[in-house]
Amino acid sequence: MSRSTVARRLHIRAAIVSAIRACLHAVRAAVRLAAAVTRAVLRFLFVPFRARRVLSASLVGLIVVAILLPNVIKRGPPRGPGSPGQAVGLPTAGASCRAVGAGLPAPGPCGDLWRRPVAPNPTGRLAAPPSVSVGAIWRALDAAGSPLADNTVRRGGRTYAEYIWDVGRSTGIDPGVMMAFFNQESNYGTKGVAVRSHNPGNLRPMPDRRTVCDVDGCYAYAADWFQGIDDTYGVLRHYTDHGMKTIEQAVPVWAPNVDYNDVGAFIDGVHQTIRALAADS
Image (cartoon, rainbow, N blue to C red; front, top):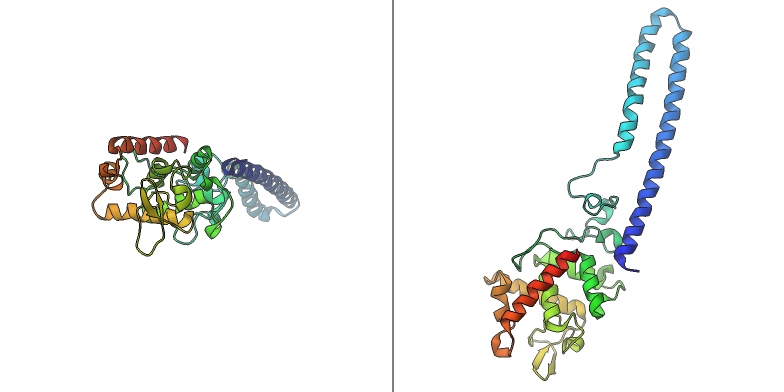
């Protein structure tokens, strides 16, 4: 069962529980209101005339409350703009799972409601808010048979898919862009030297880092996929810091013709992956 399905079931269950609690609160409020009205009526009937004015005002107040209470219960607590409940049609998960640390969502299904597209990226800007959801990231990895589709919680309690979204958010690089380069280089870690190097971007050798060599050259070795993800985002961030803002500007440097790459086809493939991930988000 996918994480998105589990999250949806958990929050549907939470919605049912919340509805039951609201009904119970309404019943208790109605009972208290009926008792108060009864006491007021009895007091009104059995008190001297001079005190009836005070009781009459109290009775009017109770009647007003009785009229307004059902509307308040029906409307429920207010939601802020952009709350997860509004975005995905599920009940709000609560502030406790919205952000931890540097403003990132908490690990797990609750926080994954917040790992959603922030803004579209149709032009393929490198530095952009996330244009994809964590669910779309995981489904792409899973469809390719990627080792990163493993849902075992790892660094910081996060899965690989959660980590990819979170690092993109924290570095300012669209996770959809990183995933698109990953797909072009190795079909999400299922082909070529990346299977052994844990290097999503097939980055060339780095100082003070082991190398892994293949028929088409040598590449940097990452101790695990998390390090490889960090390395890939680091290079993309370096590009943006040096004036390469779009995929068209970055790819000729990332995958130059001198390395026997088809730059045009690479650019088209990156754009196609970004669009596919966004459509699935």
